[in-house]
Image 1 (cartoon, rainbow, N blue to C red):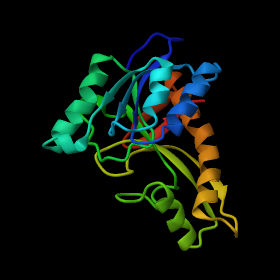
Image 2: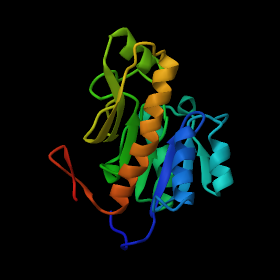
Image 3: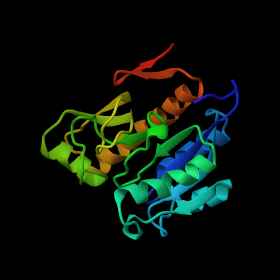
Image 4: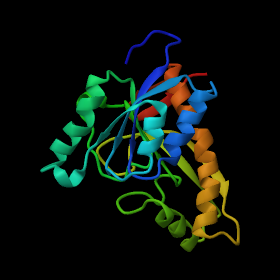
Length: 211
């Protein structure tokens, strides 16, 4: 990925639901704390509320239903072909709940955020409140969020950043989710900013962030 220094990082955001993470990214861009531009938003559902944030921001939108695709490869192509046409720098998963394989030309150009400290409480079927309830059921003292580059496995790939929160004795899945989301709102723009500044490299499956 090569771009002129100082230009906004041009990104696509993949969503499946309410779009709260997309909204956070757009707010950081609007306030000038994140040097990026959301050019494209792709949703796995036509009724995803997050599409409204995309339209309000003037981003192009696409809806690609996995059920309409005959194979994982077709689903991959229908997601990434608009990204190629838009000549994007980065694809950002933001509550995208479908399994997606990554084409070679997007290796280490797709990031995801997961609401646990990977490798704990991640993988197929662990999303949303299910993650936080699993943390509580296990009696964990801490949880948090993980941002990582995406490979072909669920919630897997080189980790870029993890931030932790304490689990309180009276937590419910909902209260823990709210506390984790607060750190997600700080962590994701931070990582996207690092990538925009060219500070993030991956070698042999390990991430290095330059000072």
